[in-house]
Image (cartoon, rainbow, N blue to C red; front, side, top):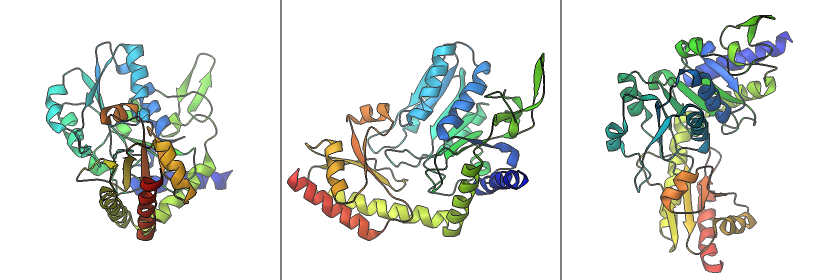
Length: 343
C-alpha cells in the first residue's frame, strides 16, 4: 500500500514538473480529457445564472462542447462560438464583437484534433483575464506533441489524456489553479475525497484528494509518469519540429495528387493532416489504405460542427508521432496515388 501510494503521488509530481505547474495540489487525476472538462463544468455549475454566457470556438472536439451544452440547457446559458477561416485559423477579429459582460467562462482547444491548427491560446487567456473571466484549455492534442507550460500560459484549467502521449487509456489530468480548486465543490462523493463524515454531513479532504473520489487508477498514473519520462528524454521541442516536418511533407505531397483536398493550412500547426479524395467516401479510402498497412482515421473525428463548417460529412486524418519516418510519409503518398487510380 505504501509503495503504491508513493508511486501514485510520484506520478503527480512528474505531471506537475512536465507541465510546469506551481504545486502538485493543482494536479487532479481523471479518466481523461473528457472527464476533466466535465469535472470543471459540474463543479462550476453553481456559479452560473440564467442568461450567462460561455465562449467556445467552432473547432472544438465534442468533449469541449457537449458538457457546456448540458450546462446551458440546465441553467439557461448562452453559448457563443469564435469562428475559424478557410485556412483553419481562428478569426480573432470577431473576439471583441462576440465578447460581452455576461461571459463567465471561455474554453478553447490549443491544437485542433482535425485541422492540426495550433491556436494562440495566450491571446484569449490575456483578453479574458483583463475582464476577470477564467479560461479552460483543451490540451489533449498539444501536451503530447509540444512544450506546454501552464504557468507561462496562465490558463486557469488545462485538460489532457494519457493515451495520446504513449500512456494507457483511462488516465487523464486536470490542471487547475489552486485558487479555483479551493472554491470549487467536489465533483463526486465517496472515499478518499473526505476528511470526515457524520450522518449530518461531511468535510471535504485537502487538495487534490477532494476531487479524486474512490480508488484511483494507480497503475494508469504510474504508467503516465513513465511516458512523461520517455517524452522528456526525447525532447518535446524535437518532437514538435519533427512532426511538423512530416506534416508539411505530407501536405506538399497530397497537393500534387489531383482530386485530393487538404483541410487546415494554418501557419502554426501540428503533425496531423485531414484530407479527402474526390468521389471516394472517407471510410472506403481508409479501408484501402489499411490493406497497405497504413492506419488513418476516417469520420467526423468527434467534431460535427467543424465538419459541417468545412461542408464535408467525413474526412480521413493522418496523425504523426515521434516514431513516424519520412519513408512512411512517402509510402503513404504512393498509396494515395494508387487509391486515386483504382478507387
